[in-house]
Picture (cartoon, one colour):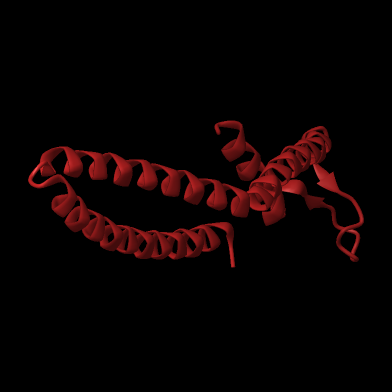
Length: 139
């Protein structure tokens, strides 16, 4: 499972849990509303405002917790991506070195067993490496 799949799975799970918590919170708030209505005898507008503020605060805390959980789940993958970027830079440097050798010579002597020389550009791999280096120079 790659990082994106794990993040999507984790996000969907957290979203489901968040929805369940919101539903439970709404039930609690409904009960509180009915109790407050009986206690306050019609002073519901302030009670509803207070309940809305409480709901908003609880939602903010839940969303922050969800973000932290996703971040913790993704940290190993982020570290791996950073390592791959560093490896890419080293590999491109090595390929540039090989291409520098190729650029100062015209052929490979002894590649063919019959004594013929092989031109570097007869190798598809050399062209592919050259294209790869050019592609990454522009990024």
